[in-house]
Length: 160
Image (cartoon, rainbow, N blue to C red; front, top):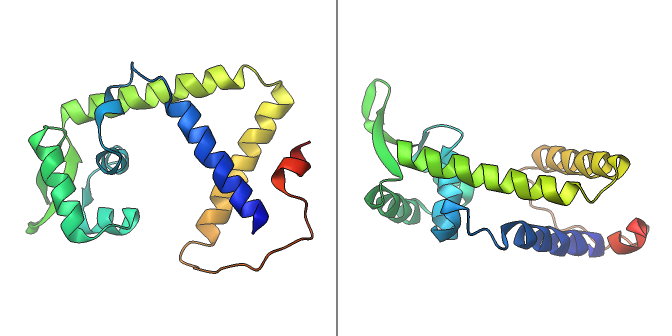
């Protein structure tokens, strides 16, 4: 549990550092909930219920977020396939452009940070992140509260 807490703090700090000083990021003005929805939609149109499940928000909250995004012309509601009753959200051209620029800014900031690491460290960070993503996918839906495990040193000790 201590290792998980340390990792949560490190991930939070990493994300704050990557987001700091991003005046050139057009998405910086978006509230976090709207940015999360746009990030999901950047992968393609989704139904409101699918987005609400993926982000863990109620359908009514998702509707409010979608309404705000639609008013700012970042998303549009579209009919899904043959069933016109099912509405999906899709990024508009403006929304796509903002999310593309947002991703470019983020990639540039990461590249700049990676330049400070030697190739072995860069590869290690990439491998560790890939491993964590796979572990999260493998445990999705399992809401366990692990007991403290004192068999491994805290992350900070393991890195040193």
